[in-house]
Amino acid sequence: MAKPNLLKIPVQKSAANPAMPRTRPIWSLRRSEIVWGYLFMIPFVVLVCVFTLYPILGSLRITLYNWNGLDNPTQFVGLRHFAEVAKDPYFWNAFKNTVVYTAVLVPVQLTLALLLALVLNNAKMRFRTFYRTVYFLPVVTSLAIGAIAVRLMLGRGGAQISELFGIDPPISPIASPQFALPSVILFGIWHSFGINLVYFLAALQTVPEELYDAAKVDGANGNQRLLYITLPTIRPLATIIVFFAILGSLQVFEQSFVLTGGGPFFASEVVSGYIYSYAFGGSAVGRSVSSVNIGYASAASLFMSLVVLGITIIQAVVLRRTRKA
Amino acid sequence: MTTLTNPNYPTKRRSRFLLEPLLGGSAQLAIHVILIIIGIVYVFPFIWTLGSAFKTSTEFFSLGLTPFPAGGWQVSNFVKAWEGAKFSRYFLNTVFVSVMTTFFVVIITSMAAFGLARLKIPGKNLVLGAIALTFFLPRGYTILPVFQIVKGLGLLNTLWAIILTGTAGNLLINTLLFYGYMQAVPSEIEEAAVMDGATVLQRYLRVVLPLTGPVMATVSLFTFMNSWNDFFTPLVFTLGRPELQTLAVGIYSFVGDTSRDWTALCAAATISIVPVVLVFLVLQRYFIEGFAGAVKS
Image (cartoon, rainbow over all chains, first blue to last red; front, side, top):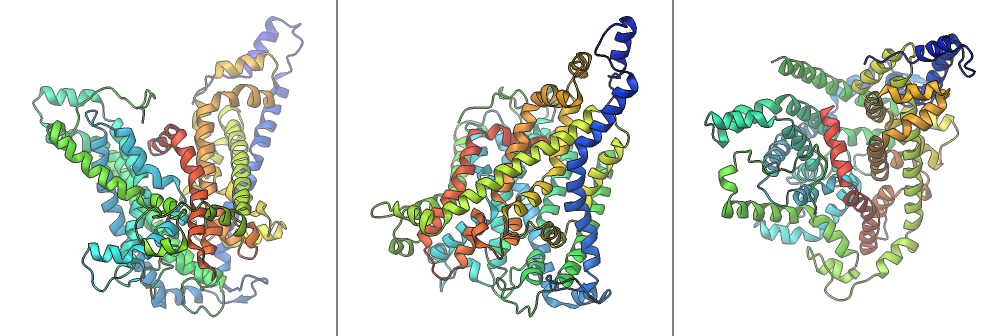
């Protein structure tokens, strides 16, 4: 952004009026601005380096060691952890669940969010703000506490819900091998639906009104305006919304960890929960993790990170292409 | 619910979409019926938790999905949660962590953004590029090295471990939010201050910072909400020290406890949800705009 040079002004002023007392020489002003500039950024840079960048690099090194998290990591194992991760059926089970979670949640949630956004974007619709508030509400509440509330509720209401859907004998959905993962997915849709609704509403606001007027003059009906104006116009933003939704879903943790504990028998365990059980002990999940091994957990984590990074890169390429189009 | 007054959110009457022919009379009614039914399902977990907080233990088991108690409303559950189950402690921990985290994030991100947006310093683009790049680095389980750093700093088993980690986690996006806003502040205002001999510190504190009200509100709200609701960081840092737990973690470990007082648990969940929901209802414009702004930028 082009800005007029702040530094020249006092100099010009002092040239016109050499007696002006408070003007300092330009080099001192510029130098003090540079010094202050760095001073202002020190807390930010230090914290980001220590708590974000270094840990990313540090976790790379840990993957090469056996480490219980207490003493210094001493036992070097090379790349053996990665081989073990790749061989562990529990990891692939968690990976499969994470992929299923993402593959179901993203299209379902985004389609519903777009539909509701279209409805709420229509000015003839009444109580729009009210609906938006209701559907956004879960977003501002804690995932963990929301999951606990739903867990208690389903625990108590399992019989009634089974009756409602004609399931006999009655089951508790979060404790059933068939319904645990669908429950986690449904909970995930419930909790973050409002974010995508608001994203789509924002995207719809970017469509210029003139386009609709022009289309009306040309005799386009409502559906044609949707297909040929609305959807193509919001496509770049919609791509970003999909991008965020996929990244967020692949990092699913509390939805499974708190709601079902990954159970029963790992039916709803996701990768983050798998890693947690190796990093901090697996009591919540029930797999007998004999000893905490942070090296192994880090290797599993890096493995997953690389998958996510790969998906990010693919999406970034797609994103760039749609922007050009 | 009042309509928005924000100019970016047009409220003037427009006919826009596919449902246009449907939105007259009975069809609009049908849509309302659907939206209200789903809406009730949507808020039902909250209503059920709120209602269960007033049930007796017997009612909790016998009433199933019925949200409200059949007999009297048991306020004693809140007393039990607050005093007996130490949720007053968790509540204070959560308030302390959230307020301090928000304070540090606002100070640190606004300072960094001021340096980047308003001062001519060499290497500025390098920092901006690094921020953008860091966004896309795989995060993974960096909590493990972070744990070691916090241990090295001697902050393990203090609330500062959660505050410091939480602050660091909220820096990148909020610095960019401040940066974008500060860049748009007209430079004439600051030039006038420079001519009056204002120091850099005065320019930051007296000129630029007071002009960033809306973005400061967004940053504070988001950070406070993230911090209040955060589960993972406080979970990891309080594994050995239950008295340092925040509400989310306290409630989670309460569920795992052997002596389960479910109605008190519902009361505790209510205590932890209500403040955030109230803040949201009062300031929802900033929430919604903040989220909408995030996707647009």
